[in-house]
Image (cartoon, rainbow, N blue to C red; front, top):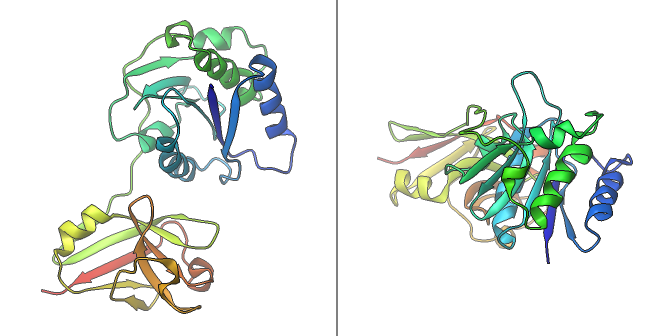
Length: 259
């Protein structure tokens, strides 16, 4: 069965998501539509890329993923269809793809042929992306969609810095529980700490160990663990660590390593 996933900043208040699904089903009644998220903050490509990056590897190969985030084009942007890691991705060349992939994609095509057949571009997720996604989900080739190109627009990524036994990290994502994800992977943490004692510092608080589960600590206590995506996460048992400690995307987290 063909699968199309949806990751958008359209929200759930308006008719947009319903119209989007209706347009897909009008072209492919047999397709499986999976909502990954429609509550990505408006225009926030970093949030959207993080969500889809963790979700898409769980889907069957040849799944088509629509990225409807900050979807309107500008003079230096276009709409793209990308084949990478056995999956198709359809979205706007606004920098989101550089946050989504670690590898060079196998194929990149613009959607110039699809756009030529569209009178209005007010709702490109529905009027452009759906046509491209359904074509690919049917097994169509990306060459039909437009012109092949070599790359896509890149935006700066926020990377951790390790210097003089101090690991400087940044909050890159806050989930619906208020858990704060740091841009430090388990591998980078282990390579930096090397089994030594450490102290995680944020908002005047300290954590000196890594937990294995969220419920290891009593309610209200803060803890650190590596989440299912392999990133360091600061959490609070049965509460929101982000709300109680004023953590937001961009907040600094420092890890001091004993000499």
